[in-house]
Length: 219
Image 1: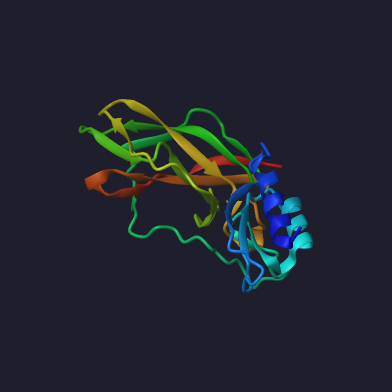
Image 2 (image 1 turned 45 degrees about the vertical axis):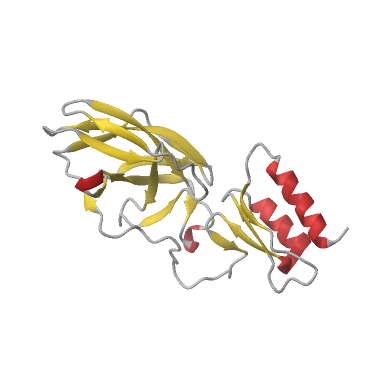
C-alpha cells in the first residue's frame, strides 16, 4: 500500500468517527505530487489526531487544526489573527433590538454548540433577519472586544428569514464555535469567561453586530 492509499484509508476512518474530527480534506496526492500534498482540516480539539497524522505522514499532508496550521512555531511573535472580522458593520442600537440568551451558555473548549438567541424588536416596524438557518457567533475578548475565535467549517446555505414583529420576541438558532483564531491562545479558546456577538443581516437596512453577551468555555 502506498502512502497515499494509507492516508486515504486513515481519512475514511476519521469520517466514520462520530465526534466529527475531520472538517475538510483536499486530496491532490499522487506519486509525482509536488510538495505538498493533501490538505486536511481537523476540529480544534483534535490535537492527538493531528499529532498522529504529522507523525505518520509528515510533509505529505498539510494539517490545519481548527483555524491554524499544525504544527506552528513554538514561539510566535505576538497574537496572529487569521480570520478578519467583516468591515462596515453597524452597532445594533439597544433601543431597536434587545438581544439575550434563553439560558446560560457553556461550550467545551475546541467544540461547537447550538443555542438560541432571543431577539426582541423594540421598534415600531417589522424587521427581517436573513440567515442560513442560524446565526454564527464570533468569540470576543471580553475586555478588548477583539474577535479571537468562532466556528470553522462548512455550513448549509439555505435562505431562511426570521421575522421580528414589532414588540415581540423571536428565537433564532445560534451556532457558537470555540476554535481560536489567535496563536497565543492555542488552537482552541481556553477555559474561562468569554463573550460573543453575532452579525445580523437585516437586508436593505444593512448588517449589524449585536451587543456582547457572556458565555463560559469549559475544559
